[in-house]
View (cartoon, helix red, strand yellow):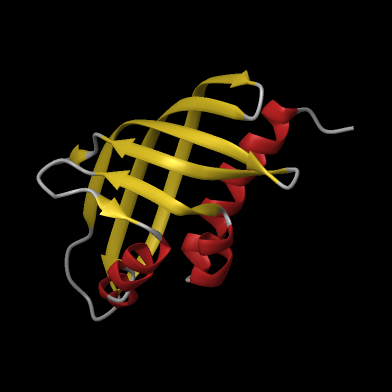
Length: 128
């Protein structure tokens, strides 16, 4: 039987695989309807629809990311994790890749037996 920690780690892995494949439907299935993303320099992104519309700009890039989970803490139907995330976005039409890296803090909520991303704050900064 899979533990809650294993299930949360699998959500992270599935997210990364789906993002790399451009599978937004799968990525959207991994978050709550009321998801909130916090990114430096931008207002909070609220809800799946806002996330989905932000992905249109990402279609111009090949996406590759790695996430090193540093901690997973489960508290009933809630959990938080922090990771070290590295993202490389390479323009499909050619050009220099954009690299970002930094910590993330994410909150998951268990709904109908599944762990879903509910809140995410990432502190990624450009890597030279």
